[in-house]
Image (cartoon, rainbow, N blue to C red):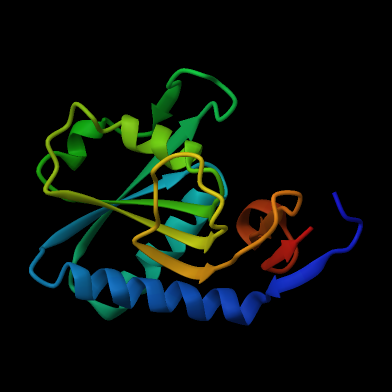
Amino acid sequence: MSEKKVLILNQEQIRKKTIRIAYQLLEDNFEEDSLVLVGIADRGYVFAQRIKAVLEQISSLNIELIKVSLDKTSRILDAKTDVPIEQAENKVVILVDDVLNSGRTLAYGMGVFFDVPLKKMRTAVLIDRSHHKFPIFSDFSGLKLSTILKEHVTVTLHEFDGGEDAAWLL
């Protein structure tokens, strides 16, 4: 891994991308009364909270928030939610994470809902790295970034990491 750290999104850019994604979600679901945002712990959940806040400012949608905690290193689905997943039944679910890399995390996140009948499921990420090993793609992304395999993307969000929001290419 390179020692060079390149800023790819600063705090203001992350704020604007969050707002844009919220508007896109609203447009994609203009006939809905409610949405369920499912944030993947930890930064995905923080990002989902931010999207929820914007949606509540710009719409009359009822927004529910579910936190999914995953063992991302496990070869089997090992996930927990902070509320019963049945709350998402027959609703539109938006699975939210900070970075889409291989697709494993989002695939595991989707797996949580396989036994729950949904209206539809979409994915929203701050950064889509375009190195998918799984057939998982972002429906909504703040930034699509083509990188080489040796490069990594790191996101820091104030609520989880402290300091300023930023996304870095390492």
